[in-house]
Length: 138
Image (spheres, rainbow, N blue to C red):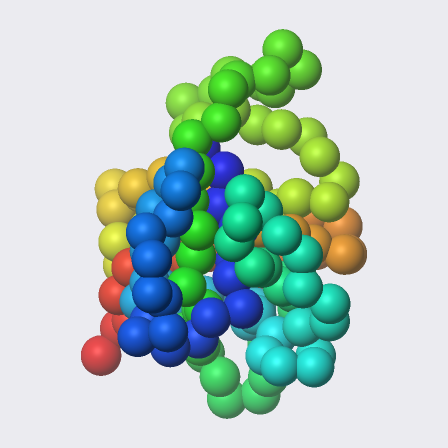
C-alpha cells in the first residue's frame, strides 16, 4: 500500500469517498509532526486527492500530535522494491517507511508500514523512532 497525508485536518471536511483508495483518520505521530497551513507548503494532487506537507521536527511538549486525514491506496509492487517481513521497502530517498502501531508499546502491536513524504534523510526519522500510532497513551 501507499499512504499520502492530505491537507484535511477535520474529518467532517471529507465529502466523498476516495476514488481508488480510502481515508483513515485519528492517528497520532510520535517523534515528529506534520505541518499545518502555510508551513505545509504547496498542495499536490494524488489520484484527485489534495495532499500537502512532509514530516518535520516535533514542537516542544507535543509528544503525540494528531495527523491530518491520510489517503491510503493499493499500488502494484515494483520490481526494485525489496520484500521484507514488514512490507515492501521502497528505498526511495523522498519517503520514510514509517511503522504504524496500535499503541506506543510497539513490537507486537505493529499494523502496517506507511509511506510518508520527507525532505530530510530517512535515517534522521529512524534514529528518532518516528512512528504512527492508532491511539495515544492516556
